[in-house]
Image (cartoon, rainbow, N blue to C red):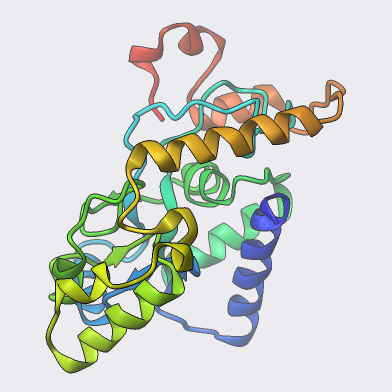
Length: 251
């Protein structure tokens, strides 16, 4: 499934551009992510008053996200640079309608990589000089937010939720209340390792096990360069000299 993420999102954007002309915003949300819709609408309305073209979400915590060459999210030499432009995490983000035409044009002409968020909200957005706007109201990558604070509208999204979490969160949102004890009653086995009762260490440990298993099954890769490296470096403002001076890169 991970190999098809960029293709899946690209097809969704193509469909939107064809069948929804004049669309104002596109929201991409993972199936394990809860979204507080009133808070999302309020935030998007504030942003579009400042800039019509944008990608909005929780930006990567590192200014220079490193390209992973091993494990589940490995990327081969079809993307030869060691760093991505700083991108928006893929669990929940917003693309403005004004940014869609240029994104679609670039998707048609740029070979993709399987990491959808790094590709769409990082590389493609950077190639088109689309502002990537960061908001902490969107979920990060660790389970640090209080569940009831999400239903109260303090946050826009919360990720790593299982089906039982989502049912309870939306029920509380509709009822206008939140009972934290209800979440503690959700059996751990129903949420696999996404359960809020599991420690971050347990999550990371299982993720490392998956990475090791994927690496063991990984076939020997050939050296493939699908992109015009010089053109890509020029467009991303990360030439060979800049790669050696990470502090001076503009990603």
